[in-house]
Length: 199
Image (tube, rainbow, N blue to C red; front, side, top):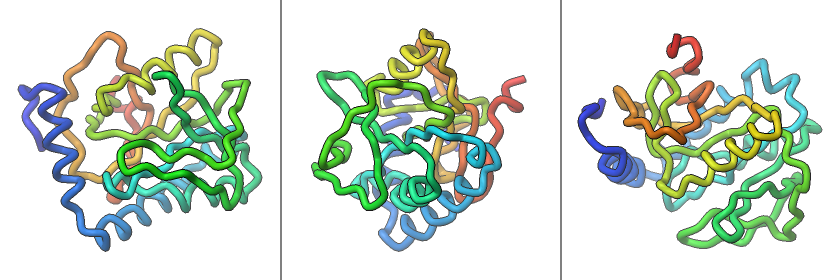
């Protein structure tokens, strides 16, 4: 586990390098376990509107494509992030969704159908690192923090779930005033209830 004295930027750099070093076989195997654990969460049964990122293989993000497809086929209203002018919006995800893939940016749904209403029950959140109290190291762009702040202003408070490999855990994420804590983190080894740990 990493030192609490390291800056968020240093931790991000170190953890992303470790993640990108995963072999494709290890990445696929552990991602499959993470997705299965996430899919088994009881709260998903009652969730009607779910927002989930599309994992980037070159970055070895915990894979989400099977989870997205399962949720969509289960009749959930599923959405994925779309970045426009530095702002994160929500786009519809449909079973068998096609994407335009860039080597350095999130996938874009093709065709693109933006969601006007932003009211989600669950949001799956990508991360570089996390701690057990819900602290999250993102990617330094602030997209999700601003997204959650915007939802909160409208009275929308989805359950925020991080998907990560166990080695992405740190003792304590250095906090910033605008940080939005996670409610849960799902790894290949366990499901962590961050709200319970933050009491």
